[in-house]
Image (cartoon, one colour):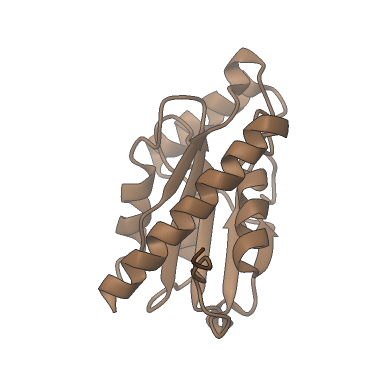
Length: 187
């Protein structure tokens, strides 16, 4: 039996930044961390979104329409010390959520490996991975990971648990092995 390849060498400093409203994306971030190590950071807003789902949907639609980027409470003072940055987020309105856009515009990730991951309510990634590439033009953006999580609209919040979490662990490991192969081809 062949040992599993290391996806990212231990010499690379890894940051895993995620936005998670229902903890599905947080669960994927934790699975990634358990496989590659690194520092786990939750994106928090200076003014959190409303608890009410429909109010949040309206606010996000307004932000996407106007281009407004909500100010972040989260601060990462040592971004220059990281070589690899995983960015995780749910799909909101078929787009990259405004707080993740805020993060990607606020921090210079030039020269870094950027790796997106996503959870969604069943509609997929929308334009989110493309937006990550557009906002990280001077970075090496690798193939992203996506998995269906919950559907807050339907009252299904944390869906990646128990058997679904074990399935996610297997899928994340498979994805991490595949991007390791991509990294070898890119170098």
